[in-house]
Image 1 (cartoon, rainbow, N blue to C red):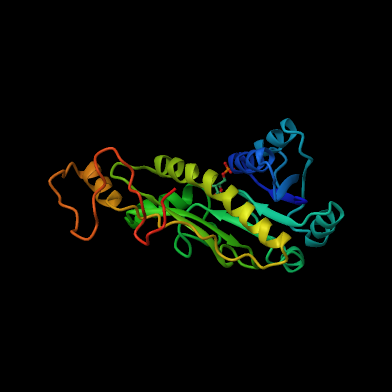
Image 2: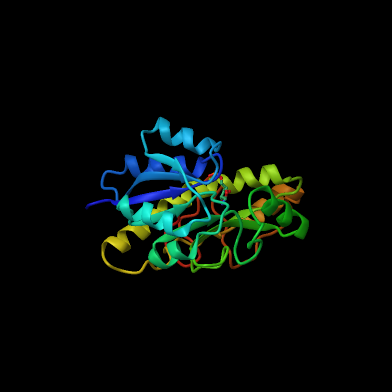
Length: 248
Ligand code: GRF
């Protein structure tokens, strides 16, 4: 297939940029390729990471929507991936690329999202709320922060003794797996002329896993599993998720 030329917008370190770019570039039949990296911060480390990989890169004026739309159009961009991009995408860009801009958020939206909720702040809010599960959300971008249609989510446990750093690292490891999968899925839908549907993922709640985590966190090895949730044999991964589909 002809890969969709794709722009990645990032404000920071760019670990998601690297995960995305390396996944697409090592794919035997890529549905998209990173052809442009744009940052609103001239000192962002992600610019150097693009340079090292030979990917065109430059800074942008985040407030000039017309200039950004023209730049993306002139570069023949067909899909836009926000990867730690901290600015609101201007309306002129959203309306031109509607359904073709994705964002990744390090929590389970609609919780812990919106203006000002980014980076460590998200994980601090998760810990302050006392929730035991956080996660990753990938969604389409509209005119508001973190509100577009959700295409994929994956949970990540919050464990006893966590701080924002430890939760953030656990979440980021999932981001690096989930975003390339969703970008590939969306690009294939766009190439086929379809609007992207949510990614069909296996049930992430593995049989027994939540209780195993609870036991590990509390040392309560005497807790019994509910009778309708079979326990896998010691050391063996569960063969199927709860809806009968194979786990990955
Ligand atoms: C990620 O946690 C992403 O979800 C959020 O910003 C962070 C960017 O990290 N939107 P990196 O620059 O990709 O390392």
